[in-house]
Length: 282
Image 1: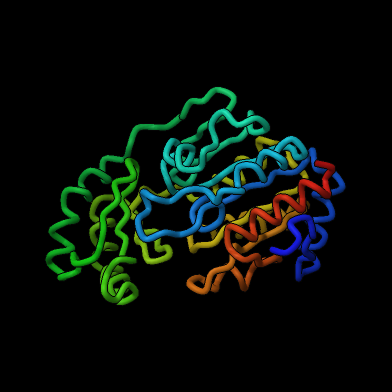
Image 2: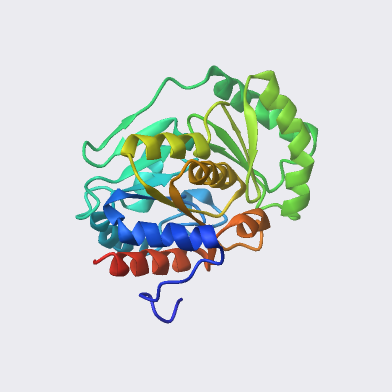
C-alpha cells in the first residue's frame, strides 16, 4: 500500500469484503472509528511524546466529509488525545468525536468541550499505593507510572527486560486493582488500572447505534481493541456491515488473527484512510 496511497486493499475475509463494499456503496451511512496509540500515532517509549502520524489528520480531514461520522476511541483522556492528535480546529473535522478513557469521556469538535462523569475514587487510592507495590516486588527500575486522570498506567517498555517486568506485575497489580474496585487492562508493555463497566466495545456499539450507521470500520492495534473487534462482530451478526482493521504489530498477534485487513502500522492506516476517501469520492 505504501507505494500508492490511493490503492484500495482487499480484505482477506468475505465479511470484510462485504463490509468495505457496503461502506463504499453508502458512505454517508458509515462510521469510521479508530484507536489512537499504535493506530493513528506510532508507539513511542514515552507516552507523553506520542503524536499522530504527520499524515493522519490530513487523511482524516479528507475522509470525514465523505462518510457519516469519524470517531477516535482511546484509553487516553479525551483532551489529551485531541491535543496529541492535533484534532481541534481542523477544516473537515468539524464533527469529529473523540471517546476517551474507553468511552467514559466524550469530546465533540462541534462544541470543543469534554463531557465526563466524576472520577472513580479507587483511582486515587491505587495511585497512592502503587509506588509501594512496585518497590515490594522490585519492579520499580525502568517502570514508569502515568496518571491518566481516570486511570493509572504502568509502563514497562523502558525496563531492562520489558516483557519480564510486564509479567512480574500482572498479579500484584491485579490484586491492587481489585482491592479498590478497579480492573487491569493489559496492553503493549503497559498495564492500566481503570474502573470496570466501560471498554472500547461498549463505547463503539453505543456510538454506532447513536449514529444510525449501516456500516462500521474499526482500526486498532492492541489488546484493548479486542473488545471493539468483538462489538463489530456482534453488530455484523445483527445485520450491520463491518470491517476490522489491524494496525500491524509483532507485539500483538491476537488482533491480526481476527482482522479482515492488516496494514503496516499508522502509515498503513493513513494510506487506507486516503484510499477510502478517494474511492468514496473525495
